[in-house]
Length: 328
Image 1 (cartoon, one colour):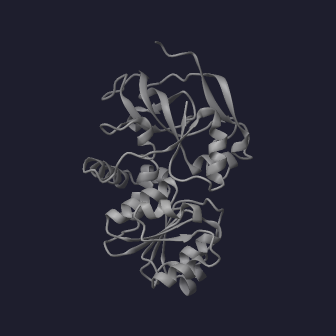
Image 2 (image 1 turned 120 degrees about the vertical axis):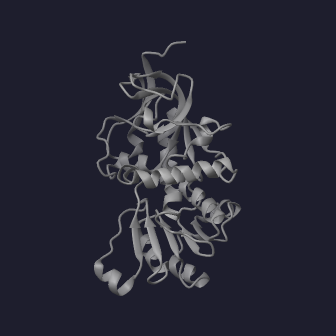
Image 3 (image 1 turned 120 degrees about the horizontal axis):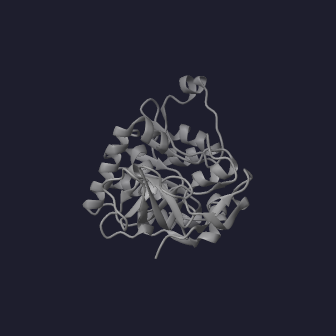
């Protein structure tokens, strides 16, 4: 069966949010150019960055109208020239553009073979959530056995990965989540879980500790201030990799007189481009964890492709837990 000429895809039509994402049924199927492969998408990952792009708050994000999504897994159906090491029929996962569609083009170098025995759905997050969590904990956060880490949005895709990894590396884990998700976070191995919407989150953390060694900060907004206040003076680290709750400010005065801590920014796309050696080490560590059975296949919550706007709205409203996937 050959590749069709057109496909279904989700198109973002404005910068007013994912409610203006529409299903288009006659989008031309892209053709792979030199060094590219075309995959038939069987599962696409839903990420908070998709929401940021839909609102126009993602730095240098696409301008509407554009095909939404960037993380997908599927089967190679065609290849451009100068592609080696891959062949039609290979199952891969990759990050590109236009993932919320039936077909997607990927640079051949960005097409990662699926781990043995894993389905496409189970690999979602392997190139986004998991490396973000591991990079935040290890090369940037320098977590060590016996230290304590505070993980915000611990029930989300990246948060769940971070809880599991932090426990594997011997840390005490304090997670934050809405009360309905506390059992989920505890089941992942967290030692404590706090209400993410508590009035004085920092005070709750300091009731349990004398300050945490590391904070994984993705909430933004008012929670960012709580993250700074919860970190240990001088040695505490705050790795910031998300702005889900909006922007927050910090001044040099704050660092000298109020929060004497290390603040580290993380964007996985920039890490890949600016520090490919570090990213390579992170991915090597992840695949070693897979090989030894520490990292096991994920179980995303799935939605039909047409329900992509609903999935994004629920993610934005903090009404979901774990990884979300769209099935074309």
